[in-house]
Image (cartoon, rainbow, N blue to C red; front, side, top):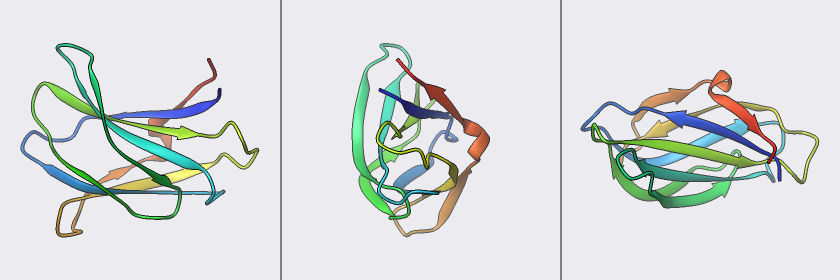
Length: 107
């Protein structure tokens, strides 16, 4: 399996309701997780495709968790991710995701 993984620290108290990733191949899927840093337990917020806004379970950041974005690039050679945007429940952009945030995981 080959994935691109980004780990994001969202400012405490910020609510994220949707995520959009931009990239070379709009058939590539991605998943958004919140992870409790005290237990390591991930919670799936939702899954979607590159280029389409994913409305997921609202996530309100705290000091004891973070977001993980996992992009499944195993089925394509067009795996460039240009970046993304996290938005709140009213679709106001609250945080950008740099392409440099993604690291390859080829377990």
